[in-house]
Length: 521
Image 1: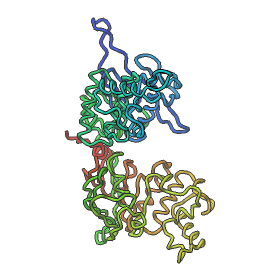
Image 2 (image 1 turned 45 degrees about the vertical axis):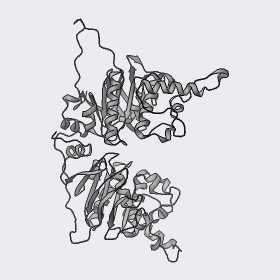
Image 3 (image 1 turned 135 degrees about the horizontal axis):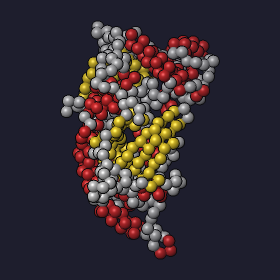
Image 4 (image 1 turned 180 degrees about the vertical axis):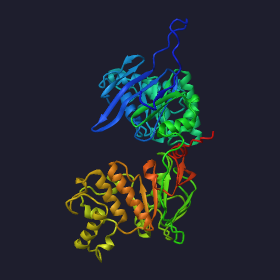
């Protein structure tokens, strides 16, 4: 066990105390190593889940949670280590029926087929057959009704699955898992799309199923939910097991410290700051609201100021940033970019008002892979390349060459397709386009995702340099390294801005706010 790792679990009862031996774990993974090329996704990871408990698995992005789920569900074989169910070795990966009898996962993105009925989803490829081996739809509906009744799922089996609420789809998926015989269910971010009332109903359902002998692995970014519903918690960090403990015995501050690798204090961020208080704000957002993702969001970004918009995956941070640049239209509220009010839901209007934008996913939103670096870097500034709809190749190349030099893009020339570049250089092309028109506001969503350390440092340095020139910067991210240079950070939780944290924050405090944890509770 390496430094910082520990396990806090009840000691086993002595063999001669007259009590029956404890039941074997529902599932136990030990010494799990999983590599994807040079990336080590799990490094000697382990977890033990006892019968009837709800066991939380928590950790920051990249900690190894998703990879462990793929191993526990038989979607990936570990390179090293063992997995057992009830003390018996895990089935062969090819024996999918055996895996379904042992474990099921209800993912954040539903696997229910919306065009089929509830009954058809429950018994897909397991239909009841009558005479002549024809499907007996009456029999299928009868079995579905019995299954839903047995597990107290109040859904009409003849309803089209596409008409179900998110909550109902989750209950149907749980019932389907139980119908295979599985009594161990993994819930992957089950509350991400639920409101408070639906979360309470889900938790009541989990407790009821626990009493009936069902065991859960609960994965969530919302740590207050761990304290509300879970018995045990395991923390992963940097692909390794860090701690396992009863939830009641692990203070919230210690849980956050285990996730971040910090005690209560660590590195503070140093930045001189370049806010120009005499200039008009680069961004003003007032009472911005969307029907399903965020509510009553109000803030400003000053000229030369770097503001972070932090939060977990379903916090609303990405949606707010996309609204600012016109990828989304808010249902309520208003926003101004450098004193101009762009047309809602219009990217061209946001760009014309003075915004530059680095989107969340460079592959799908950031560039056209078969187009050249020059064309990609200048896509948003056609007016600088010619008049009356005619583009000057010379102007394009001169502008592109300046951007290539400014962003240190490694390429033999501006005509090279972006698809031929490394991930870090592709992201530099996306940044180049965002800066091509000297924006008054630079909006970045997860700006260093999937790039190497050197490219990350360069890109973040360029962001700081841009702010020093008087451009306001909004960074929407849950990666702490993206946020360290910020003058202040607005933390979003469940669609609302809940906390403002000034420069000089500790990782420990920011993560707690992002996870909705009150360290003073």
